Length: 170
Image (tube, rainbow, N blue to C red):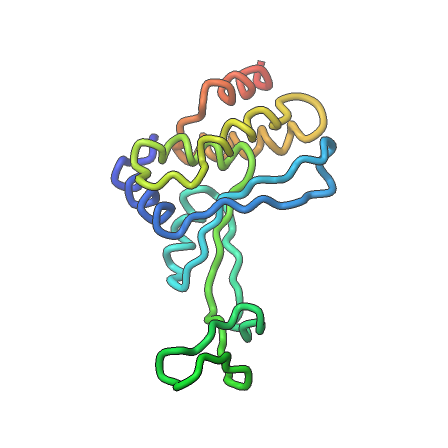
């Protein structure tokens, strides 16, 4: 059961509009490399839940919180002098975040590639993740679980990942 083209197109539109790559420092990585994540933040929680159900991942729910001072923007529209409001109750609204990392991110981006309009450096990220993904040894079990989950959900795997799963099954 493959993911319907309409669903891939919908997801590509969301990723085009809201997607971004995040590079995290993960001290548990044996090679010291940065972990690359594809992330979507959105106030429309049902959209994030749909992304999660399509990929078998759990979204993060983020509570409303005060905006830190360094994120505030200067006011120069309705006030005579440009300044920053520091005593107002500016709040980041409640929202949700969907993320997918590593081999799972590669699978998703490869499937969405024909439908994506905006390139946010995805090709370079995919190449880097493929080069760093452990197919055997330490960390490989988590990779195989992720790939198996996505395959069961209908995602097409890149040949390099299909071979890795076939080798494990043999």
